[in-house]
Every structure is written in C-alpha cells, then in structure tokens.
Length: 322
Ligand code: AVJ
Image 1 (tube, rainbow, N blue to C red):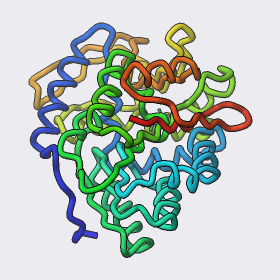
Image 2: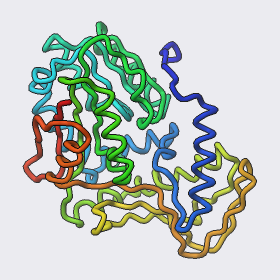
Image 3: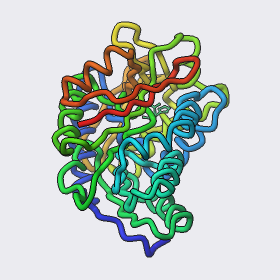
Image 4: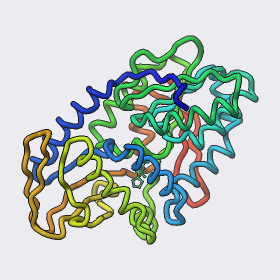
C-alpha cells in the first residue's frame, strides 16, 4: 500500500503545529476541552471502525441502509463525474455510491479526504481494486480546509457522511456549510448524513457501549498527546463519560479525572493540573431536527432536493443542491 499517492494539503508539521495550538488552548481553558479531530491516529481510526459495528452504535448501519436504498436515485439526480468525500475514513459506505455512480455511467473520479493517512491508504487500496477504471485521488487534510482547490474537471457532488457535521459547534457549522456552498457551482450537490434527535435512552448507549470500545476510543486521545507531544497522561486515571445535553441537543464525551493529578506536556513545556472529578470535554456530537438542518442548509445557500430517513427516524440522508 506504500505506492498510494496522497495529496498532502496539510503537512505533518502543520498538523503538529495545529495540535500544539489546540492542546495549549484547550488544556489551559476552564472547563478543559480537546477537539475530536485528534482522536484519529491509526489506533483511533481502527477503534472508530470497531465502534461502527457495535450493537448500540446505530448511526453507521442506519446510514448504510439509507445509502443502499437511494444510491441509484442519487447517481441519477446528481449525474456527478466527481465524488468528493470529506472525512472519508474507511470509505466503507461510499463504495455503494461509487458502484451506483459507475453503473449510471457518469462517475469518473473519487476524491476522499481524511486527516488520517492510514485510513486513506487502506480505503484507496481497496477501492482501486474494486473499481479499476475509477480515478482516485486521496487528500490528507482537515475537512474544514479542504474546500480550496477541489478538482473541477466535471460536475461534482460533495459527500459528508456519518454525522460528522455534528462535531462542529453551531457557529462553526454555519461557516463550514457556507464554505461548502461556496466551493460548489449551481447544479452541483452536497450529500449530507446527520443523526436526528432521538430518545436519550437510545442515543446515550451509542456513545457508552457495554463492551467499552467507545471508552477506549475516548481515552486514546490521551495516548495521541503522549505520542505526539511527549505528554505523560495515565489513561488509568480517567474515566469515560457520555451524556446527552438536552438544551444543545448534542452528545458530549468527556474524560473525568478519577484522582487529583498533574500532567506534564513536555513539548509545550506545560504542566496541567486535574482535580479529582474534573472533566475534559473531548467531543460534541450534535443531533438535528428536520426543520433545523434544512434551515441551516438553506441559510448556507443550498436548496433541499431530498430528505430521506429510516423508519425509526434516527438518521437522515439529505441531498442538497447548490
Ligand atoms: C465519526 C464523528 C460521526 O460523532 O458519532 C463515535 C465519532 N464518537 N463514537 C460520532 C464517535 C464516539 C462519530 N463521528
């Protein structure tokens, strides 16, 4: 897989610089926080793939069923030559869109973007075997700054699946969606997957599974800081917390210190104190209501073409036209 050429829009040095800035900001703030983007080293990406197969984690299989049901319709409506996917991860569900697009005859190129080179290489290796005539160009970057320099040699659809939009706070979301709209021209599409607001008793276990995989995924961010910034976090001193914030309508993941402790982050020359019970927020995962997300898309400059949902209305797949 080492022969896979990736376009690196964000250099490892720049990514490390972003991590340093983020960690200094987040760990000296009160309350403390980290961006969920730092979960995804090779271990974190692999743990997320495990999460997608957990019985409690409904988003992935719900979205996959929606894509399966509507992939050909999407191919016909969009007639896209180029499929760009933001935060593509394993590209596992996307192969259904690619299969439909190539069968329809319009799709020539797939452009997956992810912050994790290992996830991209794995995905591209598989896809080029499965679709030998498909041109694949991987981009290593952050999804919020991928939108410049997208290929423009054909009509494009940008896919942003899995509910990852929910990782952004509302202000960031508005900016990001407007940027996506800006990157497209009239007649091109955004295919967006988002989680819907559902019963707390269903959504919380999806982020706090019985097997403890999500807890491992959450704690892995501390290993990332140990590896990349020479920190000395002991993940044994933190416990996984997932809670539903009913006002904001999002899930929050946190790491709660089980004892008072000091952590050294060598590369930042920073010492951080945690009180017993103090919590570090590591992720928000917002869920949406139909009217709300439609309004956000319209405000960003889109028109809603289709709004598909599963029978239990847990997840939505939205086709929006620029
Ligand atoms: C990859 C951002 C869509 O928010 O559901 C899974 C990440 N966090 N379990 C999500 C995640 C905890 C996931 N996204």
